[in-house]
Length: 162
Image 1 (cartoon, rainbow, N blue to C red):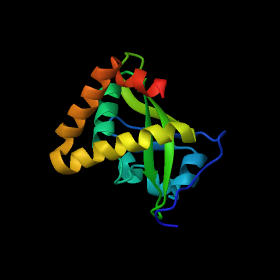
Image 2 (image 1 turned 45 degrees about the horizontal axis):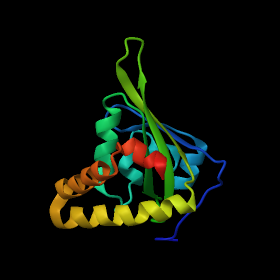
Image 3 (image 1 turned 180 degrees about the vertical axis):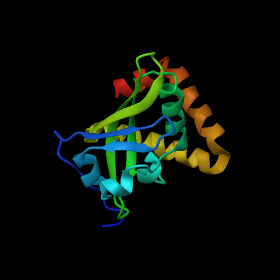
């Protein structure tokens, strides 16, 4: 099962919530099931427990830069199961706030992405990952910023246009 893609139903929604440091404080049954971890194994752990090593770090940097400002972020992620298989998700991540407007947690809902969209995302992620291997995070961030500038869009606009 290692290195095999795991798919889930198109109407299935994976949900998790983290504290402000990214530690899981809630996971729904769908997320628990697809990840292969038990609820006990997930709660309190950094969300990167499901991070696949083939995901470019720059996407996580974009995510954290955005959500820590209280903005909503949509992105595609390749996650890894406990057994080493992988699954792709289209994630919407938002900040949860207290009554004073302070960010107290982050909430993410994830759905199965469309195959056509992944066919556009995968080559970009491969390029970003390759740049990170040879030139570090700065190299992939520069590439991503230049791509967005060239297209005249924000990251959010880029993702929504795919």
